[in-house]
Image 1 (tube, helix red, strand yellow):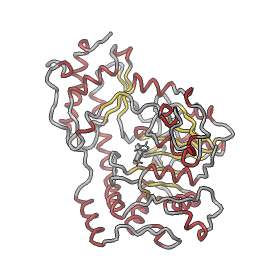
Image 2: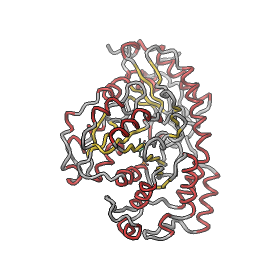
Image 3: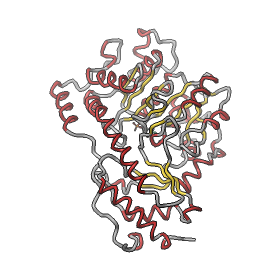
Length: 428
Ligand SMILES: *Cc1c(COP(=O)(O)O)cnc(C)c1O
């Protein structure tokens, strides 16, 4: 085999991987119909039938609640706004503590701040990489009001243990299921495992409409408050008999009819897209078994995984090689995806910086009403997160549904090439 690309050899593959594009004729036709009708949104911020939006929005919500088995589905314009709605709806007040995940997209930890809530960072389970129930239990205080769980990389959170803790202490469980649409735990869909679940329909997710989100819940009261916060609560609460509820300052977090029409078509494709992703993971895992010390994070017992990212754990001692050296060499052998060249080769070392290291926490660098009552985060340390980030976690997206067997074989060959020439990489 030729020299490593990192050291000037030929890369194993130069031709870009096929675009991960889920938008097609069905979405074009649905959008065309909305454009012909001309009603691009029918929301009204008043106590009126149109408070709930137009036909496309309501039809999406109907299908979403049927699919995921929840009483209510409420569309919003992002998962971010959905998490804000959820924090408001459960009644977070200044000084309330919300247990959050230290390793996720930033909003998974910052959502409580909008209502003066205090994020309390908790570490991950070393084996399945979601919030660790034992660490949650230690972090619960008199002031804890909720646990904001994340189905990280597509893995459902440990619902049995965490829901039991929430019951015992009278806490809400808010589930950020942005990365896990279609994943299941004990026969229930991710999103429907806690009191409120929040999906994302942004461009990077399994299915998308550009920007969007959906909030699901079985609780009628929570559903109404989410609808109010989505759509100018302050103008509507009096006639809806909700004027005594906290946090009834509204926003415009409404989804347009065009986005809802696209999201509906995308929802119809979810199962097929997910099956292909899972088949690709099975193939990759079966072929990438030649590196002792490189292991794959499995779905937890009772769960199916949605593989937003494929999480791999690299043992530097057993492999005799630093994770970063291996991944940098691998990156040099492989191409980016068509239409997403700017994102580079879709494999990385670690995920995001531990969230307690963000400036909003280290420097309290937010608006003073967000940060004035926050504790000193400089001493927070989640050892599992730091180890994953600094030396053991590799994540990649080579399992996206556009990848053919031939494309996957190139990925496998690149791993094999770098592994077979690993002596050229040893830095110690
Ligand atoms: C993508 C993502 C979000 C944010 O979703 P938006 O729809 O872009 O607001 C939140 N949490 C997690 C875990 C995500 O992956």
